[in-house]
Length: 337
Image (tube, rainbow, N blue to C red):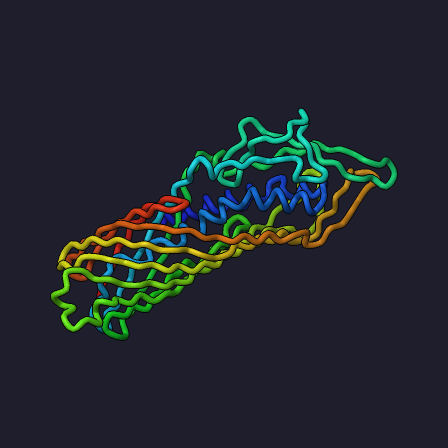
């Protein structure tokens, strides 16, 4: 669990750091161009995190006995598809950015990919004395530069059954501050076994449940000045809010059970570039920008999960695989009381 948590922090740290790397230098080309690039650059990472933190909400379709309590340690790994590692950057969508070789488009890395070799752009800005000036900026690369091909998440989860067939659930990952990066998330949900309402539910061969869950993640990174942009209190804040709606079907055996789910995720991701930024040529020209922009993205998608749960007394272990925009595998250790 500790190694998984540390690896998750490392991946999120690298992702947020690379999101900052050189993005603030793009402010040289203007706020609108920097915002447009940032939206395309971070979109797959935000989506991957959103799908990852919604895994592991259930390990069975059948609800425990009334007043039953369960504590789970859940680890998850979301796989990064090749199409999420890059995007097509079209200079026609930008006002003050072009490629040095005047290419109309190029495939560049997202926060999940890697530019190898480096890709540069020419940013144009207006100097009040010398007129139009140009600087060459290296586009940020992504976590692919660290040979990372998955997004891990890990958390503690607890559930309680106040009524027959009903589970109230909560999950938590404490906010950790390391190397100027703060990351944490929490969530809560309710799972209801519909078949528990049937008169003959004990002899019904399968359990059918519904789940509704909310998850919130927030992270921030305080960073130093860029090559062309000076300033103070510069940081990136990221917030992800999601809702999961899931229909779950599973067997009702004593020791080992199999389950499957079909669900839908919806939510938003908001990334704010905050602080004071002074675009300068180092001699005469200087322009100050405060809290340059905010990027908000909608997240949605269908997912399907299959898994198995082995229960031995109060201890259980489950594993499942989810097919979605980011396929993922989850493993849970469950303690029931």
